[in-house]
Image (cartoon, one colour):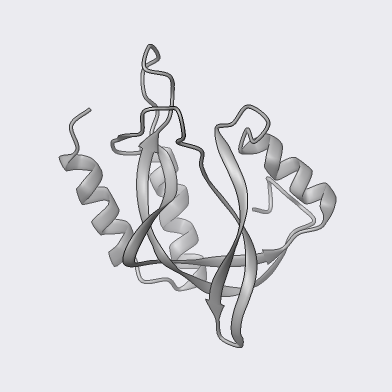
Length: 140
């Protein structure tokens, strides 16, 4: 986050209920898939993560990074559970409407960055490991 949105400030850990971590590609069918982290609605599941305080300049940078204007990811407000209660948080998730969602493993570089984030925030990596196992089993 330091390099993507330098004005963002760490806030704390959070849990997003009703979603599961996945690795997906929403590239058009004619393009080779590239698999990125996503949170997909799934009853009974949850994703642990980190919250940041982000100003409008930071949101503009993150929107560009996540390719929101092209419809690759969408920014949505969802309720998350924090140490001090429930809060509304902005979450980036893959926009899959009208596109085939394909699952598969992320690149080694991306996985290394995600594992580092889990370690930095003291998050339990078991959900990450489950998502990787599902991605490895998925037909491409």
